[in-house]
Amino acid sequence: MRLFLVGAALALAACNPSAQPGAEAPVAEVANVSGPNNCPATASTQWRAGGQTITIDASAQGADCASAQASLVFRGANGAELYAETFEVSQVMVLAAPDSVDDLQRRLNEWISPPGAARDSTDDLPVWEANAQSPVSGEFPFYPEEGLDRAAYTALRAADAPMFCFVQGMESEACLTVQGGSLRKVGVQTFPG
Image 1 (cartoon, rainbow, N blue to C red):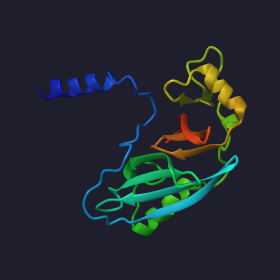
Image 2 (tube, rainbow, N blue to C red):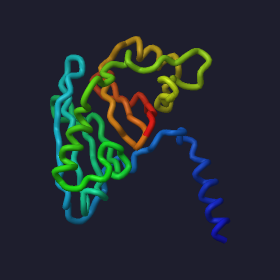
Image 3 (cartoon, rainbow, N blue to C red):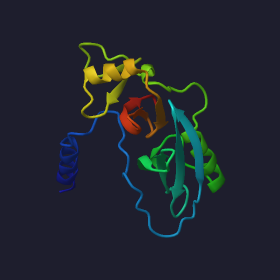
């Protein structure tokens, strides 16, 4: 019976048409945490994206920091929410295994203000070769967001639009770009974990 249940679970997982190999999915689009918040870590920064300033807020909530959820919210100059996503802290490489609120606070700051050279333009996205299934950066594929075909992806690269990428799993980062005053998810870049 146990073998049957394991097989059934694997079969159901394989049927998910939106799953992409190597890309982790966020746990939820909106935080749904009840109970006391024993991990009140927060961070905020501003991103100059072309002619607009976008505020990026990161916060954690949970019974403890190791099992908390982290929310990422991008807001326009008028305070309107442009993009939001929530993740399990334990499933994001730069946030996983914090040992205190202060430690998670530091990690949240690094999450939204990555050190070193960052991809900051759609021109930095990997080239999508004519006969390739997806763009590839070295040996690691980039998975464009569903509905973004090669022609649209190539046009987006050529537009050299502002882009913000953040670690969203143990072996991947998500990239967002500004289009017409709103944010759009371009896709997910995998990397070694």
